[in-house]
Length: 131
Image (cartoon, rainbow, N blue to C red; front, side):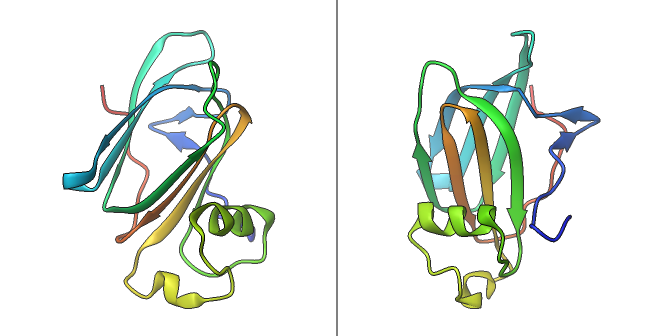
């Protein structure tokens, strides 16, 4: 992870840069969110799953929703990405208590369309895309 808090967007050897988010499935009872993805050629690439979701915000959903970068934050940072995820979630970026429970924040930045911010109550680790 770099100083900006950005984790490389690679899952099972696949980079998510330029992948399209084609659907969102939210299960509030189980605190789960799944993103359906297509690769840059338009081929179904499976689902990216997030568990222990406490808060979620999606801004700018469009007909085309292309991932620029995925950032995962586990402590306070000064980067633009960190301030952006805090702003989207309505959190004070200077308060380290956000991470007191061992959770994290995730930002999916868009090159087009939707940006997604998540607050998770537990750590999130990248796993191969689910089919």
